[in-house]
Image (cartoon, rainbow, N blue to C red; front, side, top):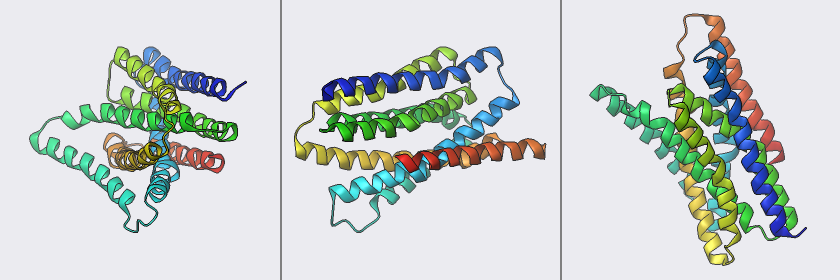
Length: 253
């Protein structure tokens, strides 16, 4: 098989794993609107996002910036990351002062947008790959966390009472982003354009890291306040498990 065939297979597999990962929380949503197991799933999703910040998004952003700007000393990716965190915090404070739930209703869609952009740039990186070993390595890396991100996104949408129809649409579009990125990346052959793409990808990854950090910390604690200490400990354990899962994935990616 030629390299293009491998890329097509990678796109189909990544699409499949994203859809399958979202199937289970949607099935639970249809059968049982709310339960303790869903609370644990939400905590697990927060752990996945928190782990993605420190083991995937932010390190990738720093690496991409250093590759694009070899003489750069100032921590620009870290600055962009903090900006993303502060932006969501500001939106929350403004919504509280105005007595509205605008931020709460906006966060799941912003999260879906950031995940989609991140998945698109990942797919483009795979599509740009010029050798089979590079393509296989990137495919494994994307395949490893695509399912967990799809699951976490679905759980977050359910938490914010997004309708099932909208959830299915958002998950389907999110699942398509990486294959579309692979298709776009495969058309990129100019080295200068690729370098600019790396810098842009670094900005997006850093900003996404800041938004994910907010969602997995301050936003998570806002929704999880339990009278039972045992339930709180179980949720903490689920969150830690999500972080450990992403840390384990980072060994191979």
